[in-house]
Image (cartoon, rainbow, N blue to C red):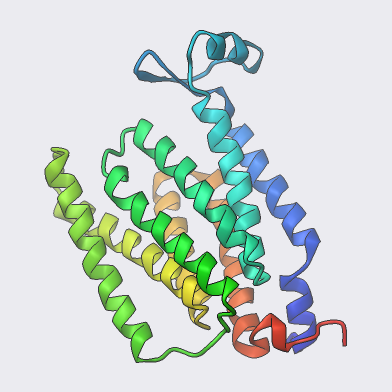
Length: 252
């Protein structure tokens, strides 16, 4: 069993940051994300890297490059949050905009009603951490936030399907989308209020993503989410055992 100091040192390790960046970047390149553009109102895949500039000059939107960059920056932002550095929340405000635009261009029209909420939560998190929010145990407000998050999740997802005419005959799919979005909302809200359970929530979220990608046969994404879930589990115990970074000196 890891002692308190070793656990915090692993969670805060810069080598973990570097490994995560290399892993995410390698997966994006392996899946040819960088070769995707948005051109003349549609997604175009398989554009060789050496030809990307010529397309951009013609008005193409480098959705693949921005997606790859966004994945790497999001990983770094998540690692900063793990280390309780507020810069991670601040970066998250901008990566949410990038992710929302890309998701919308890839056909998720509901992004225009779901990502603004994530954007607002990131702003709240930045403000609360700046004001000195401390790691704390779950309270009555935490469980009220969970209930509210899933209520909002179901409302937005089903409104999104209705407003944008998404024809899904399998109700299980709708519930799956709503539940996954709900878990992510709980994770984001828990982050803003620095609850100990924050990374327990993200562990469940990553587990769901692993199961989904195993079913889809997307091994590259499985590897990525295995890294995320290990990171989340270690951070959960670090926050629970070691508490707030301001109250602990890992150099002792």
